Length: 583
Image (tube, rainbow, N blue to C red):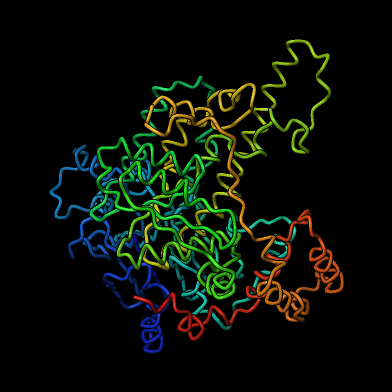
């Protein structure tokens, strides 16, 4: 897991640019604190920062370069050992890591065939020296980020946005239309555009070709890869696939930890790891709780004891939210989804301080197995998103059609969550709050082979008939394991609420939040916001003692307060953020 940066000019690099390249360390060194290297030429500069996870020796340092190509790579290719064994390439390998395997496959087969063969989370730059083509490639669900900017004289790409801002700070502006989309529809991180005008992201499942200062972007993976003929759930097949994805995410040359909660997805990882041949790689688990709020400590401790490891609790206070809000906006380069993300930032910090660099988490299962209420049209048939006629008097043919229609609508929403909505937001924030702490966060349930294998059961196979509890395949499988003290997996979804709504009404967060929401800074920059109406809504929210009014709108305003201030992403401001300076 790493970070990289590249700059290509249409003219020779001058002394001023070369001096600025030295400062990029400030933005990206936390992504790869172990070692950094660069290669440069008449008109280009490529740099890589490495966090050593596979093959801890210097022989796997990047950039990788030979007479054919240059490579900058960030991520993990989980099937690299199988690719080595396959003998598809008649070559001798000089390292025991995945970077060399990726590089030699690209040398031999090119982009398209290599992408089809690799499994993992990744973003990389591959430059063919013969054609001078530059390829920017991103994994199927966008777990690893990749951004770029192009004008008539330069092409810049980076694992994060801040280094690009540093080189074009005189022309950069906040995209107010995207801020409006975020405020009105809570949409962010899912499109090609970022909150910074002219800076784009390579979309998940896409690769970009840069040639002669022209860009062509192609999609190699999208919802069509999941949209296949329906099949019945079979526990044997499900068991094989879920065990495989967890096993390959446990392979590393460093010790591994687990992010643990009371939810079924997190606890399912415990069950699977307890029976994995790689279970000895797992050394510790971490969970967080909020001060004077419902705690998951007992559940977390119970499940960590099954693995024979200690669970470390991270206690989050109101002051933690205030002290780290601006810092996480700088790190995240966009809105913070909620206070749970600040909690995960501090959890990953503790993981780092304890000397670990790899963390597993259960994100992705809700999207794969229809775990959200908005995807459950059996339990919630009257939702606005399913407008169907009264079916009481329908005959059996119409009943069959209703079942098909539910599946059709649920599939559409699920694909949107995976490719445009929830998962793009989730993986963006996962990358930022982990990598700023030099921690590689692995998500076994977002493995594309696992997602493909479980995405096309008949819709009714995802739910229990009487209770309509979701994620039926996972629960049936877990019950079949018959693990001591883990025998009943058919329970209602635990929504794991946070005190965000409550804390916005309590001191010191209440005064801190009001100071921001009352600031003219927001309203003079965004004319679609009416300060008078916002303050009326704030007062109504504060008077709501039964907690019926959702305060998320005010959380969004707090995010916007900082996002409209471009200066917080500047070189000098980033240097003041302790997360960028801690080693």
